[in-house]
Image 1 (cartoon, helix red, strand yellow):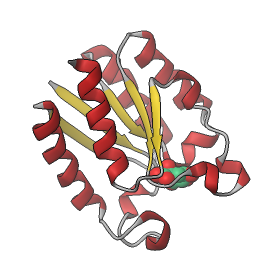
Image 2 (tube, rainbow, N blue to C red):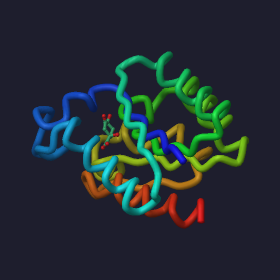
Image 3 (cartoon, protein in one colour):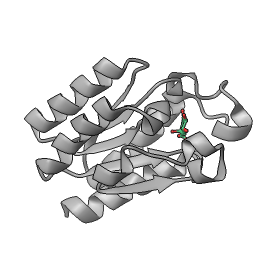
Length: 147
Ligand code: DQA
């Protein structure tokens, strides 16, 4: 099995991006952690990707539907306004594939504009606020789903 772990805009800058909020783990180090967790917890391969491009992220959701791949998604700022990404994610869950929305921070404890997620309503579930552990918890949640 392969699990897609897709990351939206600015997450490629992890490590140097506002470390007081997002931590000091680089995106490469986080990717490595995710591959290890997927292997240990799921016996699966994690396909960890990041893009700043909405169209590319939408295309990855289409690929997941076509390939039957479960998705863990940190939509980053797209969380709050991308109806295109929401519609693409809706196709994933409509295909009975799990899609877990994750965030490093707790958006509800931050600025008002982060309190809305256009993704949550069509996600299987959401995990937020645990830093890089949000990724591990999402992989653990998938294990329960995939059996
Ligand atoms: C984020 C939270 C979003 O509000 C923000 O735009 C991000 C990262 C998180 O992981 O905490 O880029 O998704």
